Image (cartoon, rainbow, N blue to C red; front, side):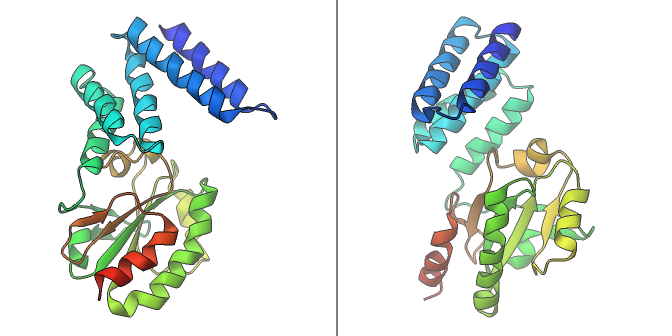
Length: 232
């Protein structure tokens, strides 16, 4: 199982990076290979990772029921693994709409932050990392939204998922992004990532002024319209 899974992963990486790669065809074969691996080696530790990849693909394809089934299998069959912590958080995220959201931690400047302190505001939570180019491209747009709607109780909270805390601190040092950025070491394996199963970046979650999740998978182009609809 160990050798087979790494062979599958290496083969996928090699094919997807070819100049003439047919992404759709390669992706479908990759998913079929993962399913076959889970069937052939259901008790191997790599089966949990294979199921996690299948769940992520399900989310990207808007097949959330399929993704939820894979997450549930990971939690049930591999309860003491890193993949299970991620899967449990992803289950929580998928079920979060309309529910209160808790978020606590330390900022990049060492301050203690609690999302509850922003109750009464519409809050956009932005999960990002310095290695994520789309994340960085959104930062200026988010700053413009903060400047435009901050007085109308619109707030942003960043959650940085770099592996090394020096990276976000260096990035933020000379840039004016006037909102808190939470950080804990571990990157995509950190508590801040695992609590809601954040598996890809950027991810944005919109929380209403009552502290409940309004949208758990928001795109930057949708933020302004959502906010305007909420504050009429």
